Image (cartoon, rainbow, N blue to C red; front, top):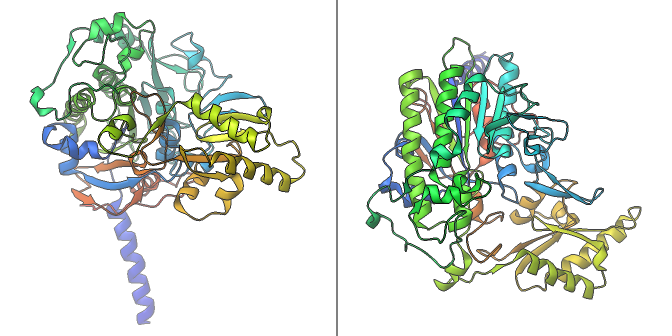
Length: 536
């Protein structure tokens, strides 16, 4: 009898805990900062005074959060945030990938059957059809009987679409006409967004000077580096810049804009308009609305100037203040107890290897075309004809398998290619498709998590700190910590206390954690864990 009473008590206690943990927030604000390394929080901490400062001081920060897949790109990262699983299950194995049957490249969110909305550009023929799992936003729509409103914004189509999922009310991204969408989500743009586009065209943001936000002496790195790539529209990489000159020198009229803090500002402005006009978070429904924002300018700029430039520091200081504007608006209009914020990033970035080499690091860069040509020669010398090497992309090689009926011969051919490229001085490790299925070491598993039947035949990685890119700027995509380690912050003044977490967790843990907090079913392919949040 005592045992039965004890069991009943434990069950009752667990039910009470669940009830206490469940959030009654009216709005979830999901923020992704494209290419944000975790150390951007600590390196600039004494210079923050707005949104980042609030989140770090009052939120729960997971300092040791990582991606569990390779390659670490925008689409796989965003999809993992919202599905709670790896690319092998959610389907977005890269931003684009080679398709053997067609001999062409497929873009992650392209959809020839979707029509552009708000523009005539075919670049708006987009949808989430390639995302194979449900997202936590999909599960929210189901459980709320489609009463929850889900609006997602980004400069990049893939940043918005992964957040809105299959059932979201709207995903919007930027082209030269303003924020646009596709027929997958709507028949026409909301009237308030049409008005916003007219009033807030890109040119209206590109006036004045992008100068130091605070005293220049607070910026620790040299002003310029020979390894910074000149930003789009600029004459040189010498900060500060005249915004009008950047705009007028850019024939696309969008790329220069996207690489400035103005790209973040337009997202803040449109997010506030969405909150105001859609009345997000102002309702009596039992389930919350969602405002998802993916800030892309940090990635556009990071690729150009690297991770230690004055420009990147200034952009993050400005984003700190811009976020504060959004948070203050929500405090006033929605109520500080009525929303939670989740902030993370889709990947990090490497130091520029040429600069790191000057500083004594054993790093290097190699141009993509050079690596491919040199590897093709090695493969040819090993007995595989060049016409059988179909494609180099995403640190993978696709080869022609002529005898699909004989898997032994196919595996032998992959091994020949693997062993051939291992003699290249830039390549540290290589694996066949079979290797990553069988191996148990972490780097092999990350490639397994990042691949599916559309992936290549042979996978490879460079040495730590080295990149396949131009000599200037930087990139990302590896399984090393500078690409995998990103911040996770949960903030909710009513339901969550402040706390620092140092245990290693995965970014794919965000989706099941939100599902738990709001009583949702887990996304269909979710394999993340619920994060150990400290509830009030």
